Amino acid sequence: MSVAQAFSEPEWALLSGVLQLRRSDARAPRSLLARALLDDQACELLLTALGPIIGSPTLAITASLLAKRFSFLSTGACLYAMSVYDKGLILSLDNSMIEYAHDDGMWTSSMPLVDVKPVGYEPGAREAWRDMIVGTLFRDMLQPLWETFNRVTGISRRILWENTAVRVYSLYDKRMEKVEDPLIRQRYQADFDWLLNQADPAVFGLSYNPLKHFRRPQTVLETEGKSVRFRRTCCFYYDASNPVEYCSNCPLLRPKKCR
Image (cartoon, rainbow, N blue to C red):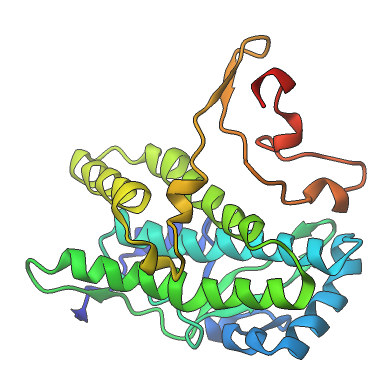
């Protein structure tokens, strides 16, 4: 591995803008090092305090919604930098902060990193570099966090991993689709294909590849003139919303004839 060229101003503007990447010295007071949440007591205390703030009725639902938010922040910054900018961010338990700010009915948390210097690779070594970046994110950070959430609250691991998977799908299917450079498009499409179809389950610290497993085909909704890739599991967002709202890909909205 090598130190990559620093992020350009436009690159940092996007990462720190819509993808909410921050340097840790700019983190919100409502934050802690990711590793701290591996402690069962610390995890339970945080989820107990956060529940009433986000309107969640149970610890399990709070864990699901926090996991969904943190998945958006962590996978967004890491994988966009990797696939679009060809620069590596280390999202590890000891380099990542978990913010849990939620104000006026919405998440206001960002993705602070202790070290935001990008990591590069030697000529011909991109695949090994990609394995390292992705493995650090999924196997070394998210998998232990989701295990802790499951142990403390009883929330299904599959719900937590699908919360993660849908964020990755949206990143590659929608946000990266806006990129026009043909070489960058070729790179991110190859990375996405690898993540979905070729990445070893060990990269996720699991016995299966969750990105492949939860990638359902789209369902055509003829009356609405659109197609939706419905989830397999429900994140329970509707249980914490007032008035009740459902995610656009909620399995509870899937037409019965398609179930």
